[in-house]
Image (cartoon, rainbow, N blue to C red; front, side):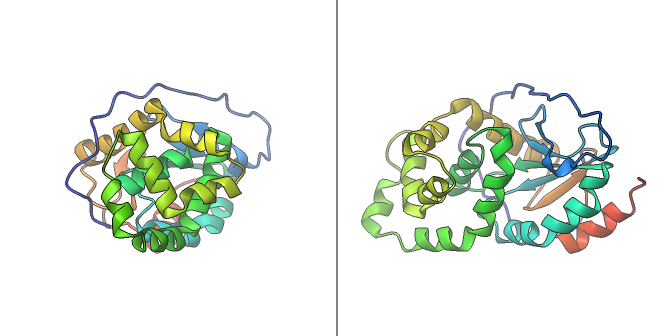
Length: 230
């Protein structure tokens, strides 16, 4: 999906949150989640030789397809071998995307990949619900502060119901959508991806922070990973 023309706001620098790596052998690395200095969520060995990063949007159908296609082979074939880690970073396309990105971060690092997968697998349903929103409701979506707008979008898309089904209360959902520090991290990732890495669409991928040209699907990415030394 091609990028929109502007972000919602300028981003502040994100703080680093590091988790000590496990030393035991035969670790199930897919269960190991840390947070990078940029605020992205990393699945796998924190000391992995190869660091794969996806820049993605929750409103991007190609990102949803990547999640479906890559989930099992990426985990079993690469992450669980310990030589590849996988980080998800946001590249925000629109206010709906920002709303979903804020909700994905609800519950901290241990909840992230479950939220992330649920949002992408159910993407057609909640986008369809938003598209059927009445004109009267649509007119109100740009009113209020950014958190107030996101709360309206959450209800219009049914994302609030998706998150409630995952065990989050209405109060927790509102708190997540109002978290300025998390919003700053998301927007900083977007700014870095577009201005520093010059990424022009989603999903886009980097290895060791180097963009992979013309790689926007699991079919295109898999051979690149297979060629990496273990």
